[in-house]
Image 1 (spheres, rainbow, N blue to C red):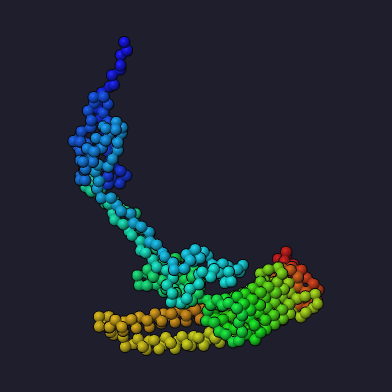
Image 2: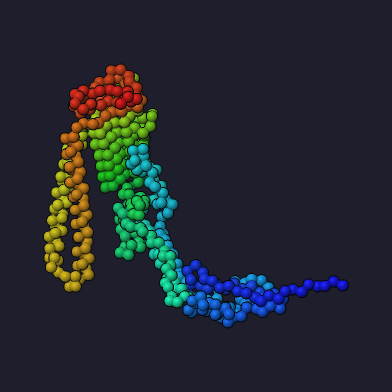
Amino acid sequence: MSIIPQRASVDGNFWVFFNEDKTQAILLVTPPQGDGNPVRTADVVKALKEMGVAYGIDEQAIRDTIERATNMATKVQAVVAQGVLPIHGTDAKVNYRLSEEAVLRPLPLLPDGSIDYLQIDPARYIQAGQLIATVVPANHGRPGRTITFPPQTVHQRPGRDANLRAGEGVIASDDNLQFTAEKSGYVYLSGDKLCVLPAQPLQGDLQGAQQFPHALVLSGNLLPGAQVRVYGDAAIGGRCEGASLNVRGTCYLHSGAQRSDIAADGNILLRASVSDCTLSTRRRVIALKEDVQIVGGRIVAFEGVEAYTIGTPSWIPTEVVAGVDTLGDERLFEIAEEIRQCEDNIQKINTALRPFASVTAEVTSPEKKEAVQRLIAHRRRLEARLKELQHEKRTITIQVNAPIRAEVVVMGTVYPGVKVTIGKHSYLVEAEMQAVRFFVARGESHVQVRPLNKL
């Protein structure tokens, strides 16, 4: 006859412990075995109080946990005391009214570091006055409180603010939750600033006399007889033939030029050949590709020229001048005129504001206060522009009187018939040369030529 072993009788057991921030107490119950006794609710309550739990004990939750452990014959864990849980915040969200992917992508750049307008995603473009983005503010949540005595504050994890500010060409609402385009152009981010790059994109060709207050992005051609002035950068996607182009910033010629007169305060960038043109710049003329040729005409670049091929084997006269600022005097005249206008306008604003100098905010009507704020903001803009003009004037004056450091670098071939002038000194190329640098050494009075592989 076999003997059935008796199952040992073991009382149920429990453990109580806190969660990480002591806003909750957790009960872990093991069930009784055999004829053992289950855990008693009173014992758990006593243990919680001995741990320092001051409030929030849920005796019903304790009984339910003990009952489930007993009925299921397995360990059961549950929260049986709770203080005030921290409510963590939610991050702010920026809702763009145009392609967010396009806005967040860096602006495309050319090799000299200037903006490649012709490669900017059209989805970035926005009209003046249009809403660019709205911000859903961060929710900073609510702190919690421990269940121990004395209760301690449990800090919540606050939501992160958008940290978005209005940059150039953008106006923010007073609460910094709405951002509107002040100018038409391409939207981009500069650090935490939302900006608009002022520009006017045009499809098709351009002819006649035209002026543009900001950057011009032309997909077509400049037709013969076109006289275009751009008070910013210019990017010409098509050919420039028999035209006149005056650019305040950088000029990018994607498809080259013929028989045209082109002047720029910034670099003139060539992605295709130019022939029989007059190019003048206060910076550099830079060829961006190996197949770019400069043939005929006159190139004047104050800071120098970086070319691949200059001239042709047929001795076409081509003049390259560096270290001479032919546009400086014209620009100084323009600066002087704009400085005069800024000073006049600042004086007019000061006169208009004088009657309000002794009026307190309490007695000034909302309409007058708004008018005064607009005048003050406009005066600040004029004063900032005045500083820019004065700095530019000093820079041009210093450059004119500075020692000549310009050079002409030819990475490919320079042909006979090319005349290179640096400052007051000239050099006529009489034999084909490869990969050379033209410069005037300090203290010398003639143009020297060195291979590029030698300093």
